[in-house]
Length: 498
Ligand code: BGC
Image (cartoon, rainbow, N blue to C red):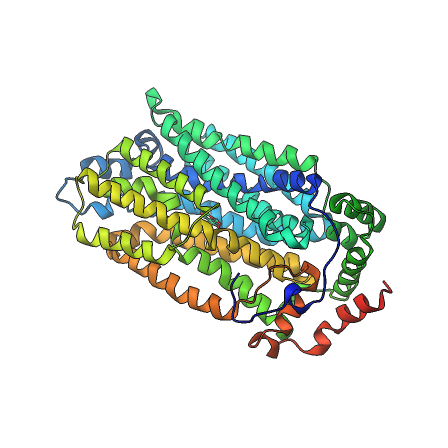
């Protein structure tokens, strides 16, 4: 990622480990990245389901009555304004927040792989409860279990990917997480489009119960994975870690990397209380980014589109079918955007301006609707290129081993708090701010772009266990990291004694 400081290759760490990009690493990372599917599926499914009349009628009859009784001259921005309904969407993220905190000691003590497996299991059970839901209680309990699954997976998968990848390809492999998140969003929207057409209105059961499939995929997938060398070393399985490192790097000469991983692990063992340690001044740069990156990611407003695209399109005067098609098109935009794109802030403004000039929406002319959908696609593709993948990549690679699990939990928890807040506040904000909502998000994007440009150092090409050096060499953050803070690691790696 672009930063203020220009650093030499390796971030000044002087490290260049030998090794190949092996098929084994690639397939392992693909399986692990399917953890993103469960997150994406959830993000994508609730918007379409909450706009299905049969679902609203069964669980939220007051919203349904309001929706069908609203006249074209009434304020359309407020027709889905119900805290109970938004809580259906947002409750999952509160549960994910709590479970990501619990997942921290679990990933540290039992490994990344087991945390993923456990997450998949909870997710699959939650999906079944939702699919067979008879009342609001079953619906909410299911959502909570789904949230626990998401929290565990989001805590462990990005770390898993960053630790498995050879340092030169860490960014590329970690981005698979975002690709599977966006693929999950797309599949969910596609499914909603078809299930909404099912006669007798039980299609929402299929949409919600469909989450069982990605849950089982990650659960079974992680059974086939080995844990990361870093985690094996952290848990004292040195021989296993060495063999694994040889296999995943495709060479026998892994001594330098192995040695540095052991050194980092030894240094991390001196830290008995990671949650206390993370508050120390030397970790101020990492703590700042563990909080700000996920907060910023959510302040792009991306989830307004992800969760509420169908509701949003309906508010703007699209019919039922057109709303689902449009959100499906937007989700293709998200998916493609995870592979290519830019222009986030500009497009948020464009969407705001379009809303602003359209007055109180009701019926939209075709060309107008098309411009709006295209603007949303470009905006969302821009996110997919920037804040989407980097929001998960950067935090997973900047923390030293001793605080990695705790810091990743902070990252996931902050992400979930903001996801929850945006999801919960959205219908109220739309109702009161109208198009100003989009101008608000555009201003956030402008501020955070300046922040990241100036303060986030380049992490590309720096081995994960040598990352402290990046902060030490940064013009601003260097004042927080003293020489003695990196001494343990530097001495151990130089001495070759561990
Ligand atoms: C974000 C989600 C978002 C998704 C959209 C992820 O990186 O964390 O909140 O819905 O990207 O692509």
